Image 1 (cartoon, rainbow, N blue to C red):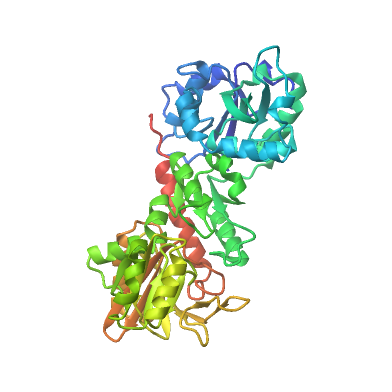
Image 2: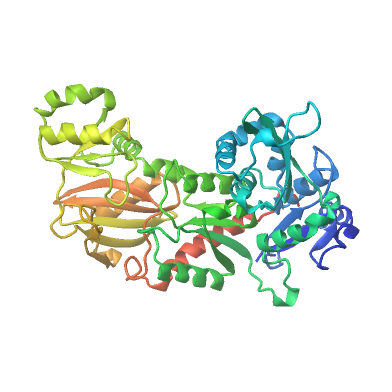
Length: 514
């Protein structure tokens, strides 16, 4: 579990709140960091990560508060706000870039009455109307503005943010966003700040004896409402249990916790990923904060788009289904070209998942009809040869090594593993087998394909047709379900995943300054 330090200008600034050993003055904190003593001797046991909540003033460039975050990060500690956030807050152009989509949200909140109409707000003769808000760890005093507060905190993570909205005609614009120090907090806001701090970090009010000592904190991103999640509930429990046995405190988070990512040492995505999606955005933010991320944003980018994968596999000489790309501008010519194609074929949208966005084409008329339908959502489609098999191989690869091997069978009476044609999604059976039962050519092709993507967690789908092994696709964030992929390894599967996180987080823990 992370060690918490709450840094204030003077310890007396904390007198309104419950006493805590976590509170330290900026002078004492900087004295600790500037000490010539090494951060950790080689023979010492690794220390828990330190999470620094910086409540100082002087957050402008090279001010005392700025140095608190700067030197904390230099020592491998996690600072809130980070130096990157402080640099953004100091330059309006960077704020405008980061908060480009806020205006739409302000208009929506005004339309729904969460914000008053600017015409009804006065601020002195001849002055434009304005509203001032104080956000505490991404929370607003007005519950109706919770979305705005959370969005601002996600983009500019800072414990105390002072926000000014200015009326322009019938709408509000973001006039100013700046950090606030604890010493300038009004008495009326102190209770709200303390409650928000308590919610933000559950570690604050525990006494040292009550704390369990974990070396690292890992966030596991899930969507409780997802119909087909990458890991079922039992698997999630196994990850948590095996992680804690290795000294990793594994916590479940959702998309609402994006602003808390800096609290953790790693992010494990157990939610179906997509590029135009919060999973990709959270992977990018976590990487920016220095977290170990599986799967990383580059893997998401390379795996979720079937067009990219098709071109990548073809360029590197891996055996893949024969096919071609078609673009929206070819729709008129498709009917004529379709007369000369060999059927059946398979048409795919670039970012389909779980057999969605994949259709079987049995003739020229179906080709034109389905292309016209799918072109509504994508400018490019992938047309490939149809390769019928009883099952697909799914080879799980983690950190460049084989993790599991399964046969995924087609849904009964259907040509895909998942059948979405009815009211309920049906899937075929599975058989997770010992790697010794897998043809060597299948494993070799899977490992070679993942080396083109990265060193994360992948599920490679392959078809075997006599002596031909074909890579269908490489999936980031593959399923790891209790009772399916863990049939051979059991709990060892979850332990291996956590061991990779442990090794990578240990490597990241090395301090920048000695």
